Structures are given as C-alpha cells and as structure tokens.
Image (tube, rainbow, N blue to C red; front, side, top):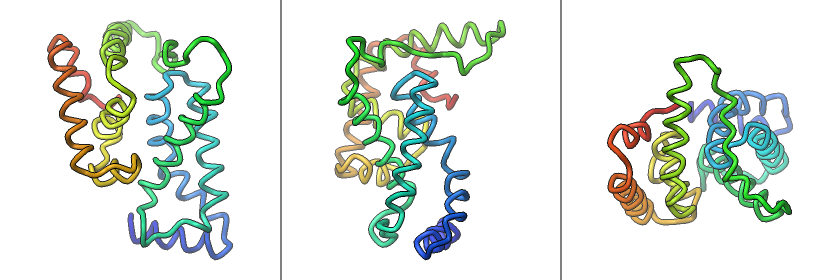
Length: 186
C-alpha cells in the first residue's frame, strides 16, 4: 500500500481531509493493539488511540514522506502519546499494574488464555520499558527493525540487540509454554 499511501497523504496535505479516513482505517487496529499492550486497559487504549489519530491529523501537513514512512510516524506518535499519558497521570496507582482483559470473551476456552496472559504479563513487566516496547513492536505489531529504530530514535543494531537481550532474559525466566505465547499475535 506504500504508493497508494503516499497518494492518500498527498491528498490530505492538498486539503482533502476525507482521505485521512483511509489511513485511519488501515492503522486503527494496529495502533490500538500497540497502545493496549502498553496500557493493558481498554478505555485508556481507546482514549490514547483517539488522541494519536487526532495528533496525526493535526500534523499531517508537516509529515515528510521523504524522511519517514507513515507507519513509523504514526507509531512514534502513539508511543509519545502513551509516554505523555504516564507523565501527566496524577493517580497513585500505576496503570500498568491493572491489566484489563475484558476485550476477551468470558467463554470457557478463553479462561485458560486469560490465566496464561496474566502469567506472561508478570514476566514482561520485569523488562525495562525500552525492551518491552521493542518486543511488542517486533513480535505483536510485526514491524521491521528499521521501523522500530525510527520510532524509538535508536539504531537498528541497538534495537536488534535489545530485542535479543529481552528475549534471552524472558527465555531464562519463563516456562517454555508461556514463552511460546510471546509469539502468538492476539
């Protein structure tokens, strides 16, 4: 979609705001999932996803297709929106401690999955924020190292190293059946 995406962006920048809805449709689920993996709370993820797209729309005229891909740009906005959210949050409790698994049905087959995800969450929380971001972006958002490097303002090599170190740490800590859940895109 890259050529088509460039045409859509050019149309948005030329004053055709209705074209932005096509970008929104292509990225809404990916951005929501990325934010949800960072907040673990449906309502917060919805709010921050909305803010992300509002910021993207507001600044689409400044987007430079020659410098970045739209994919990297929108993920960077999402990541910064989450960071801003945590910086400005005044509550005592850290929202990362409150996982909201209500996006899954309460059917019998999903109860086991919920329990396993709770266990996986405990291990992932032992990683530093950057390693968590890289794992989420690489495994669950399926972004390239180049895109991740752009989002995080790091080199591709440092992202690859951080990913490798994060996986190595989790592999040592986690039982094999839980470690395998990391590679399933929910």
